[in-house]
Image (cartoon, rainbow, N blue to C red; front, side):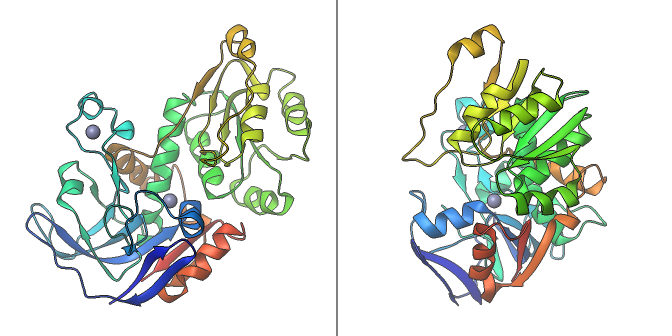
Length: 344
Ligand SMILES: [Zn+2]
Ligand SMILES: [Zn+2]
């Protein structure tokens, strides 16, 4: 079968590999869609310390069961989690599965979905990491449940709710999902902000924020958000961009008692930002992080897609066969697409 394997930074190869065989307690699936995201672009460029090459990449996975186990039978349509919590440590036992220190990932520790066939490890099944795709939801849409699950985790932690003015910084696929999810949670007004005018325009045409804010550097982003919010600032600011400058601006555009989600991580070699601690103190700000998603978030994300609360079909702008996966990652890293999905 054909797979896309990571060998080294800058070296992802589409090559032939033997079909994997499911061991006891494992599931084998025919991958139908595996979507790409900024993480794949990052891995291509820099590699990742958890990936031991050669490794089949791909972590936004939907497919069809070929060899079943337990409750799963051939033909079942399934979505698979990406981040695998251990299920037994102190954090997992407290229900905090997104911060399990023993977390492993599909496409990192285990071969992922850029392949015709993939084995779902027993560890994934043990934490309810396989979800039945509801009727009416396509494989491509189901593959977007994983990034939506991460967005859901972020908005739960930032307590996005009824009547909130929400600013999303970054109009990539994650930013688009944040806009839609915030709406479904009853946000008052949702503003989408980006430094890239072209990308912002494309995204805004799809997800229709209350205002699209083109940030031109300096204080422009903060000033525009303050103007849009009658000087209050936003109740929630989400940085969906790997930008320390965005994080610093987020602190300045948050309303009193505002919540700031540092959703996108910063480059490992440049993770320090300037934070006026007195702003946090006097304005009673809450800064939260976000690290992936739990199996329950994935299940809920699928329900949000199936019920129409968070439509994702129109966000999938490119569908490519597996041999073109590198083109897909290129399109993603140049910001030319909303969501690129690979159909092995
Ligand atoms: Zn992803
Ligand atoms: Zn754990």
